[in-house]
Image (tube, rainbow, N blue to C red; front, side):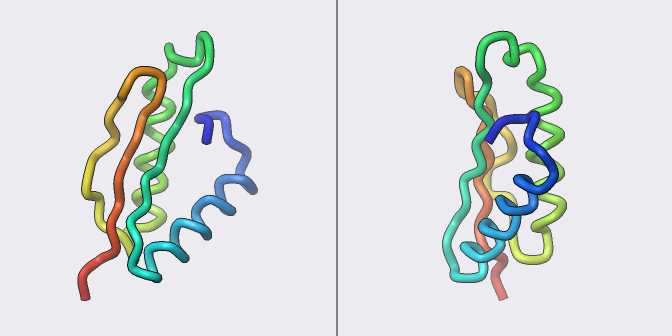
Length: 81
């Protein structure tokens, strides 16, 4: 996804991630940067932190948001019962 994602698209991503986590799968969230968007790394980190907060009932963060070139990724795993 991109850091300028619209609210409805964001909710679709959250619902898919929640479904995957409930099925016992891990979720890797990636924010891609194009061109000058690379200057707004802070906005992408805010988006990933918001995603982690929205999924905290079913997920635990396995890898904090980390920048890798033109991408920023975060890995979440299902919560242990």
